[in-house]
Length: 389
Image 1 (cartoon, rainbow, N blue to C red):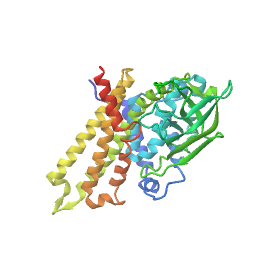
Image 2: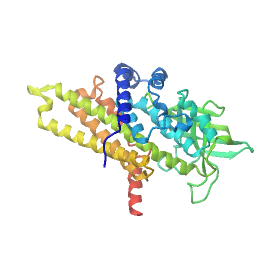
Image 3: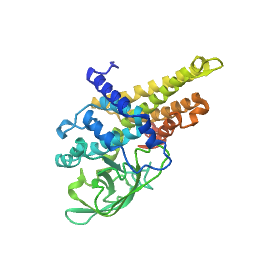
Image 4: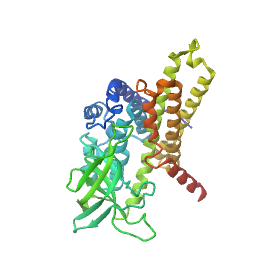
């Protein structure tokens, strides 16, 4: 069993870390994340610089479609490093476009669809989004209410509302799931997958205010008599649920990596503060209760890392990884919250202020057990997998 990274993986990790340290300035991050009002802009210049210097927006996309063709372990390394510096940017600029938008297109779509919808992402010209969640179809993803009706031989007409859509209003294209048929008692059947142009008539983006990760906008995607060409159907009619579940398995590895980045940043904040804060005439880090807390944080971080990279490695080997992705996402996301909470506690009252990053990191971490499948959904999935075996 080999736990080491290849020379190429280490070199990529080093390049991304150096890019983050040069460009993810504290002032820039706080400009977006600490303001009271929702931002009306997005750091496109930073994205363009990332595209030019790193090209990681194309990291996991196969070379056949213009991407770098990097494996999942390497992409996980990239996500962890980006998230350690600015998790909201990492989510909108890398995780969602690559793991949720591009993945279902190049995995289940045609070469022509990949050239039309993935190649612009590879070139750094667009961002993408993933529209599955609805007001009444969150954890119950099969309860899709958005309808896609055949309007002609060449078009579908979509009507419905998607919610909590990352990159809403920012993405050029969205992978959208809609019901093309209704099978009584089998809601997961009759769902289809489409690529929808966000600039098309009949598409409206309504922002939703949130507490953290403000540089990763999300909102409602409202479809009103939105006409979509049959050429934008991914896979066949009725295959949408299968496509969505496979995509979420892939995405959960990226979210686990996002959790690692936040947890690592919170751990470093706590350790740095404990080593310089003087209490009772000595460093905070010299107190045994502090050392216990630091040790617990480190153990949770390393255990999360092992689970996450195991899931990534299994995917790269072509082995089943769905359960492992859920385990990694569940554990890493909850540990990120706990580690960030401990960082706040070690900062004392300062941890509750905007002067230090601990509270911001906790707010960012707290979203992780909610999206791409809540912790409760992951537990159900893990339990059912083992009970049914």
